[in-house]
Amino acid sequence: MNSNLSRTLMISNFFCTVLVVAIHYNSKWCIDTANADNLNFYIQEFITNGIARSAVPFFALISGFFFFQQVKLRDISSLLIKKIQTLLIPYIIASIFILLCYDCLKYITNGSFQYVNDFHLLLAKIIVHPISIQFWFLRDLFFLFIFTPTLLVFSKNIKIIIVFITFILWIGDIQPFPLLDGWYFINSEVLFFFLLGGILCSPDKFEQILKLKKRLTISLIILWVSLIFLRIWIDPHLDVWYTEKYTTQSIFLYKLAIFFGVIVIIKLASIFIRSKFLIKISGLTFFVYLFHLKPLSLILYGITGFGEYSFYILFPMSTVVTFSTGYLIYKSKPPFYNLLTGGRSPDKSFHRTCFTRR
Image 1 (cartoon, rainbow, N blue to C red):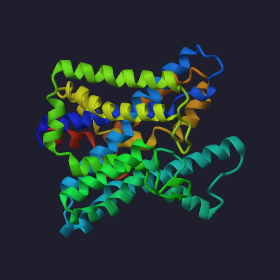
Image 2: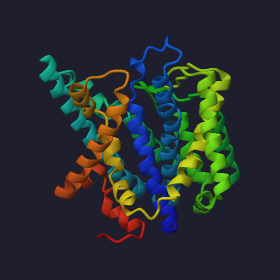
Image 3: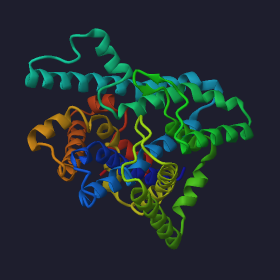
């Protein structure tokens, strides 16, 4: 993989991490939706349930791409050990830290712990269903790392058929896997994009996105935005998070916008490949993904309050706070930061993209 593609994917990762933060700090649920002319609601719907919904599919696509680039039947065990170090251990450490901080804040405000007094509940909230909702994706990834290498024994045609089946599941919003402590064992969206990235995508295909002409890029952006606007016009209250609040038309537009959004994000990121600043802070994105929500949200809500316009304050505030905190920990305690993030760091971002450290 050449350095331009590497830089593009890292900057795309930064953009998508910021979009995930936006999703989790939306304040739509405070808005009186009986007011059909509520511009605030539509702006937040466009950003957090439109533009930002391409973020997790991008993460899954890139995770599958890198995983299948590395995996071979003869060394699956060594690769899984590496994934334990880079994903599972940070997942558990962050989950423990977040839960303890959350419970301490609950004790300070309410005079009682919520989880610490119940060992089985505590264990479940650390490993199976952490209290920070974004951890569902990391749990899905680890399951995929365990089970998908078996696909290597199949022919290319069989693999394509499998990807097509997962596409049907995703486009139809069908979840074939059972719930494990309230979360799907593997979400069909993550499954589809992970296998798409791993089986059908190659460095050459990603580089074709980078080479898209200006006119085609503009057309794709217009198409992406138009699909989101059309879906909001048809069904402004669409919801797919463990519910089915949508119509056939709105879910199709929603999914189509996600697909084109992934392509557009990658292309737009390629414009900024000379930015050393963006490359550097892309090394902080995993830390931000882990710690942007709880217990930080409780602290920010306490400081600022929470209302229908809170999104415009809390989203940028939480983004700046988590990136700044991650950078301070990285600079002051590099071994601790590496433990928290599975070895991901700004230095490694520079090294992988052929930038040299200043």
